[in-house]
Length: 135
Image (cartoon, rainbow, N blue to C red; front, side, top):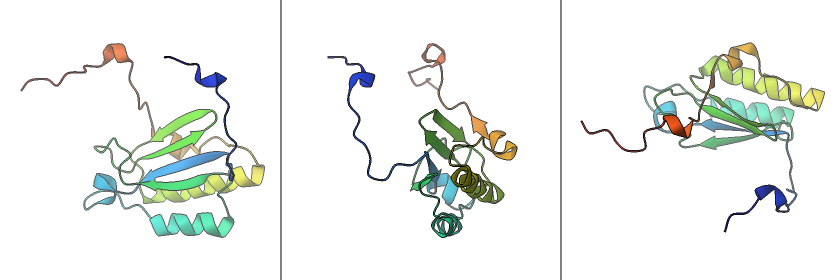
């Protein structure tokens, strides 16, 4: 039976945050030949500046799309922003952005260098082929 998700009560979370950053650290992105994900550096930046309430940091073994490597997804009440093709230098920009959000106590726009990596992650279902093409 269909239901309206907006009509369901939402439980408050014990540790709310303005946003959440999920970084792909596995598969092609974190494996040999892929972009190096500076996981330790990111964790040190988040812990050192206590950025968790501005932006909760998480790592995923596979976020996709794998052919791009260096993927991340930024989630907030406003929606999601997918980034692809992140290189080592971009991760420090993400930490700086989170620090700015903490200082301003609100979500800030992403820096231009990160906005240039935004992906249109989802397709219009009318344009998708749901069956595998025969080769």
